Length: 313
Image 1 (cartoon, one colour):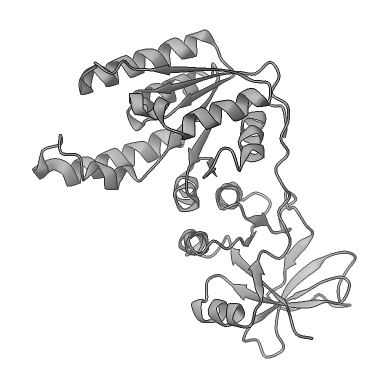
Image 2 (cartoon, rainbow, N blue to C red):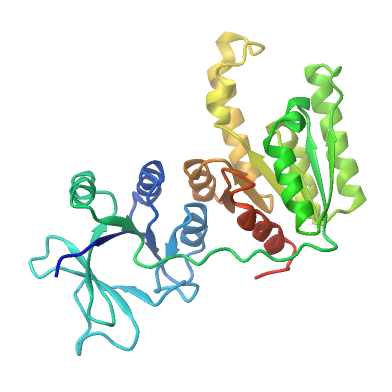
């Protein structure tokens, strides 16, 4: 039987799991991640990569089991989907309860992926991750804070606010005045975050890295759910800032990047515009979600707010 679909999977116990997930994210391929039921890091990574979670975990989307030693005695049990080695042990196969067989690739094998694509195969996870449930946000209050005025003027933030308001949420935006100096902008931004937290919204959503320390303090105090939106690689961007003396740009960028990772792991969620960045934050302890386009991924955005406020599990 010729497979028309090739499943790609990674194992959470693979020491290269983060690099492998980044690779598939760059190739725009979804995968299945196999993990144990208590592996919280693997669940974070799967969520960040929009990957299906394998059924060794009770949180799995489908009853999928990785069987590295071959099918269990007696064949396929019940409705389980099995990923097993081929007879010659050189590759993997997906065995479906109805008798179908599909090819599988363990991790990232560029040659195998290219060959599968050349044969016309559809690449993806073993199953299909469920679409996010988008609850109504009636009664939810959220405050977005930005220390850079152009953040408010950009297309992304207004789109995010429009999506949340369309779901029933009450959303306000706060930003630092255009006339503020760089030091004054940071100070004023922290004051806005503090004021927003005191107002007691359900969600506090900050958009600039200089606001992260103040946002983390609000998260630790537990007054509201806190989202940090990371829009780029802070280490890389810090190296290009002309206001930072050239001699200290590299060490400054390194310290800033480490501090961002430490603090981001203490807020409720990190929202990124790319999967690779989300996987990086997840690998370092944070709950990360990639939303490249708030309008096209409105259900995912609303689901994030719903999950953080207890409207969905």
